Image 1 (cartoon, one colour):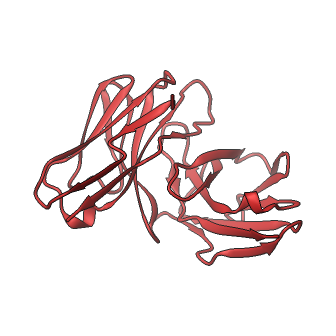
Image 2 (cartoon, rainbow over the protein chains, first blue to last red):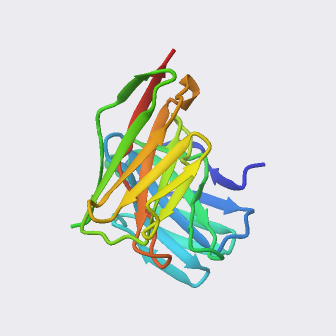
Image 3 (tube, each protein chain N blue to C red):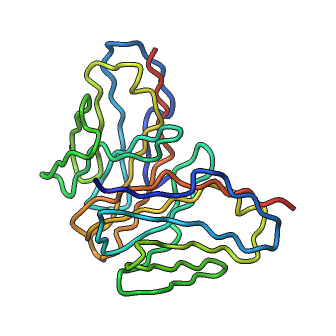
Length: 114
Length: 112
């Protein structure tokens, strides 16, 4: 089983619908992140959480919200989806035990908003 | 504003040659810089980290340099193989208290 699991892997929805993308991890890491990736724009940070009680906005948080339900779970919500939120979304985790902070990514959730 | 720039054009090289990818940044004083590999439709995978006080780091056929004066990192793959074909991303963080920000990546194609 993957260390960082994202569900769903693919989702097609309509404008105005509420969507939740879920991420769970078995690595025991404190830090979790949501990025989105668009062709030509690279990976952009949406939200991140350094522990269960900590939530921080990234560079493109508008239109998104998150919930850190437990150390192992971090979900991303689109309250009212719009077409320009069509993208590949990645969840990632990192450890605080060292300085490195290397990220471990899930396999991605491809979201299409019609 | 802070920027991380990587060559947007794909890099095509012949098998066995050395591939060199560039990462330039502005308005950053990063504590460290990381390189990731991403295959189509997959999540990025960590390759190497280099700290601000390190000039060079090696791992097998990979070598990374970090010049904080030029604000540039170079990523080298020696004796390149077709299996090295992928997109390579650089990422920076100010320190361990900040999340990583990524460049847009450079696509590498190694042909036999």
